[in-house]
Length: 369
Image (cartoon, rainbow, N blue to C red; front, side, top):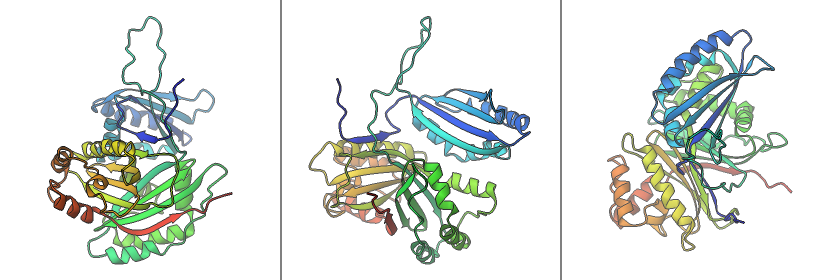
């Protein structure tokens, strides 16, 4: 019998096929309009690299409940599509038809074919992953240059919402950082991520802060308009693409840092994958100062959340995720020109200092007995 390692590893880069499940609840009478919008969407998705197939299903018990499933060669091409501006514009006609949605993403671990089928079992996840019961997500947006201090003051002053969302969902940690005029908010949730995000967004103290920073945002939004809010938060989503921890425990002697990487145009996914490979190797090295890492990526923006034992500059190359000269050269090729190079110790130290994001707030929920 195979024993699972205690090391926690969740990744979009294992090469397994991806099954995406989208649950929808339609407004009464919107079925025909929705079907027409879906036909347009289906034709566009069919041409996206990495897409294999999709199905549209309607409940036999409740005609307002619909289901879209799609299969992809792996997670990266799906994430590139779903986070693209093209996707935001393509799905816009669906929003007026839909009362509520829920998106679920699974890698394919096993499958059973009809005996007469000759389909090979390729692209399957090699083994079950060991998780820690925590869902990680981030949001990012930019503010008008010159307003960073005002925004930081507003964001640091809010009252934390209650950590308990419902019987099964709880906010564990919320961290907020800035790098120049870019804001990144990371959340850790035990239970249902969507329920937690909705819970946070509905809190008066959070809504007051969001309204207060509206005048400073580079992208206009109206949180009172459901469509405007939906588009804003869709564009702001910064998904977690990789997480690894040496074990399932959170020691007290670590310090959290958020490191900002800007990739060369079109190289964001490749950069995130390189860092993920390095973090997997670090998790196997007992000498590594890194306890755990989470990588968030959207387009050419990569944020790496690192829990470190010891100072940030204690082992700069390991902390940055480029152990060895060949990996450093690869990172240099993937970075935007203004961020690199990182070909020697001095340049690595400079990059590490410049990429370390300014901490605004880091709030952990109290432990429950």
